[in-house]
Image (cartoon, rainbow, N blue to C red; front, side):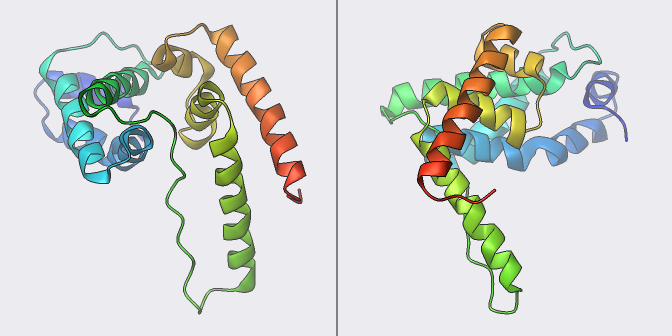
Length: 180
């Protein structure tokens, strides 16, 4: 699989299908990330398109250490902040979409979805900076360095936020009877 930074360079060298591949790779998760801020899936989709457009209109200096995705999420986060200021909407991570499985799915699937629901509900009770750091590191599989770029903090601050967030999350889950 070609890494994002190579695809981004290919786009700037005239290979327009590289842009399609980058949107395909990151579009859906970026919409979920943006939706957690703006609380409107349609606006989140518009902001996702705008974030990619900004990446494809002005060339960014990206290296092969995962900085394309960090730039993309940082751009998206800024756009979401501007949209929130415009609409005066509360900032906070929203629970990821949760749908009950169909009747044909096994009981283990129901149990697993219930565990995920408990996790998402507990995430909502965390401080916003813990939520964002945990979301980017664990749900987006972003590095500490990439998360630091997105959140505008140092890598050591992100490590502390993740550590404290996990500790708080564990306490919240324990209070709610979550079984490990």
